[in-house]
Amino acid sequence: MASQWIHNAHDARRSPYFTNDEAAHYLGISSRSLRRLRATGQAPQHRWHGMMIRYHIDDLENWSRPSRANPGG
Figure (cartoon, rainbow, N blue to C red):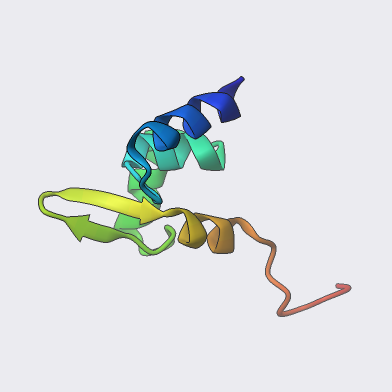
């Protein structure tokens, strides 16, 4: 059901960019946690669109993938 909410929100406006709340929901974390990660430089890549921060879906996907720097241990 939650993924349906995200899907519908983006189908309606046909944008690959998420607001902070949408990105947090997509990642399964709180909006506040995402803001904290951004403040410490640990959040997914983001962009300013006017006065609003936006996250591209590809950046969210890349950020949420496990690191392969140390495979197997």
